[in-house]
Length: 271
Image (cartoon, rainbow, N blue to C red; front, side):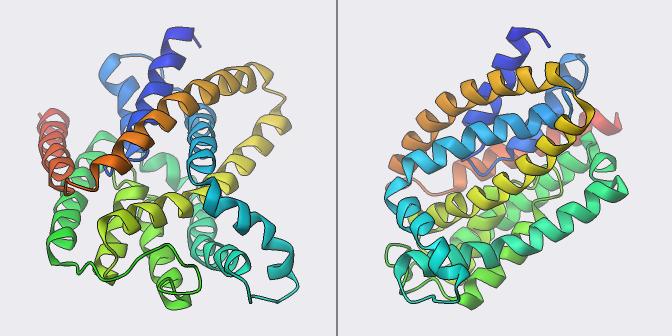
């Protein structure tokens, strides 16, 4: 794949991954709107892996104890903030991994990659995000992993995350929607969404990485590595900016973008 296309795809992913406007939807739309060949799931997942590195780097203060708590969690001892965080992230990830694997094995994941699906998801779930942001309380935080984030909340957000398998939904957007409805403030909702992305992206990257290795498609692996590196840089910058803006800006600007873009896509698709 030309280096310019890889750069554009990495930039799209890096900028849109942490905004509730669907990075996957934009990645699918790029070839449809530009007339180029679809980059395929390998590149899609590669740029997601790049953003995974950005999340880990930005939230290292939370990720480090979570990683350290994994051995303790595996021994059934969920008695520290780190082991509790690791356990709750695992619980929140199980639903999307199971459903995502089923979609991959049946080929339904490819069937959903259409402009019509993305347009309706952009529009519909954008309105749902606006409703949740206006309706949700702001009582809960995500700073003490012994506190507000409970097992029930992890299950609920895990089920919300499954909906993000529909292209155009936005994984971060739907998780933020669920967290706001549970009563988390905007910053906490965004933080939970970002942390939940770590095991989810890791799982999808592992699955696609196995497919690349099985087919010995080293050209795709090389392109993926380049795209991942560029996506990391773009994603880290976007993450820093978004987390700062959330202190003073609601999610309404993103909703307006989603609704407008969704309407445009539907008019373009059905016309």
